[in-house]
Amino acid sequence: MNGATSYSGMPNQVGLVLYPAATVTVASTTFGAIFGGPPPALSLGEYQEAMFLLEVTAAAAAGGDTLDVFVQTTFDPAPQASSVWIDIVHFAQIIGTATPPKRYIDKVIANQAQAEFENGSALAASGVRHIFGDAYRVKVTVVDGGAHGQSFTFSVTSNWK
Image (tube, rainbow, N blue to C red):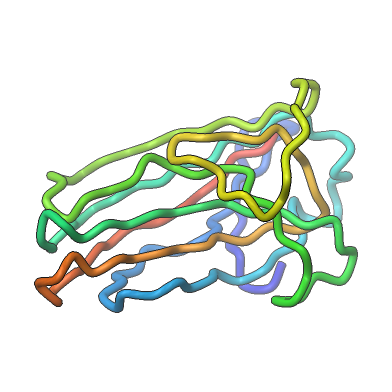
C-alpha cells in the first residue's frame, strides 16, 4: 500500500491512514503517498462506501492563511505522480485562525449518480464526487495570507465498507 497504514475494523470493513498526522508550514501544494486502495486480500469490488475523515489538531496561522485538503483517485492500474488524478473529496477549507480540534467527514458512495464534469475544473470546498478508482492519494494546498507563519497539523484517515 505504499506507506498507508491499515487497521481492521468491523467485518467487511477496513480503515486506512491516508495522510499521517503531520504539520505543514510551507505555502505550497504537496501530495501524500499513493496507495492502491483497500488491501489486496479484500477485493475492491466488495466496497460500496468510503468515508474520509480530516482531523485538524492545530492551526497556528494568520486569518488569511488557508488549508485545502483533497482526496484524489485515478483509474491508472500503475499509478504515478503523472497519472490523471480526479478530486473526489474537497474538505471544508480551514482558515489559519480555526480553533482545533476540527473534524470533517465526507462519504463517497458507489451507487450514487455522478454528473458529468470536466476534470480540469477544481472540486469546490465541501464537495464530493461519487467515484471509486484504482488508487488514492491526498493533495494538500496551503496558501500564505501574507504573515508568513502558516502552520497546520492534521491527518486524513478512511474507512471502507
